[in-house]
Amino acid sequence: MAKKEVQKEDSGKELLLALEILEKEKDISKETMFEAIETSLLTACKQHYGKSDNMRVEIDRETGHFRVFAQKTVVMKPEDEVSQIAKEEAKKIMPGVKVGDVLDVEVESKDFGRIATTNAKNVILQKIREEERSVVVKTFRDKERSVVTGVVQRYVGRNVCIDLGKADAFLPESEQIPRENLRINDRVKVYVVEVKDNNRGPRISVSRTHPFLVKCLFESEVSEIRDGSVEIKSIAREAGSRTKMAVWSNNPDVDPVGACVGMNGTRVNAVVDELRGEKIDIICWDDNPGILIENALSPAKVVFVIADSDEKSAKVVVPDDQLSLAIGKEGQNARLAAKLTGFKIDIKSETQAKDTPGFRLEDYYDEDEYEEGEYEEGEYEEGEYAEGEYAEGEYEEGEYVEGEYDGEETAEDGYEEEAAEEGEE
Image (cartoon, rainbow, N blue to C red; front, top):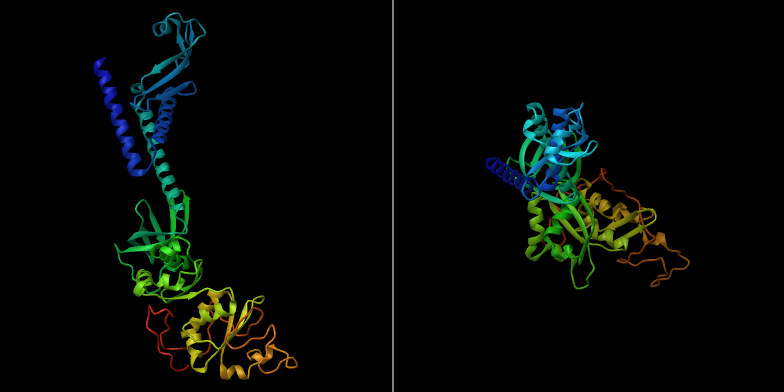
């Protein structure tokens, strides 16, 4: 008997140790596994005895010992050994029992057959897999719309499998930065787009092209963004080429652009390096759409902007030598400005504007009421912008403008060198 007790004690310790390892490595709680063991033992009972309705399992959470009991009715001559017990046998367990009493009779698990034991083992393993999957799904659902770091594991066609530690993420070709060469074992930061749970396990979709990847990278680099002093109001991105970001400060003592650029450009350069050299323009947000559009067209200089907030469109006049810079190579600068502000933007040079209705300031005031030096409400001087005005040319995603600028465009804040502004194409 003593040897049997020692064996039980050793098996209990082994069980507790195994559950502690599972809890530590796979983040599966011991209570969950205790419940899985109870279920597996009941399954074994059903396999061995044909039913388990009258059976229950007790597991001591402190020692790991478990016992299986069958509730049996005391009868003179049992017809069903699973649910009935002879009165003479019952007296050995509890003297003084009467016919019709119900006793808890302990069932030795060693009596279970090999098949029943194998099935019980499979129940436990299945529960471990389900809990592991559940933990992974919950962990990464909490990380949706945030950035995580992973290691490039392998290529599946043109798609990339990223190892995130507890799970693998799927980076499709469409979400990879153009011309970025990801090599096996490279560490990369990715934006978690969506987490799904299906029969084959959790599927985590990530992106390297999402505009919010830039936002999250700046949040990790700029303490003023994390504490709420600086807010990122809008982002427009063409992955691998250029990003425009509009920022605003809740604190008048904090320069939002300077906070994002950092001392000697350290903060913005850290983001640029992670994005493999992608250019980033940081501008000041303004509630006045005219000023916002002027800022968004940086580094090009603007003569004036006429914006219509209702129509979400704007007309912009720039100096003759700034037209190509304002439009950008293949229309990129104007296209990103349109995405950033949400306005359709038509840009013309001063020479072109003189002969184009809607691009002249005199088109927007009543000549009978106008005298030199006087401007009434709704009229504007050069450099002044208000809601209610706007324009023609329209640059939206996927649209391009005649006239290209071959020189590189740069951010206005000094973290990249100013590009040449020569010539129109």
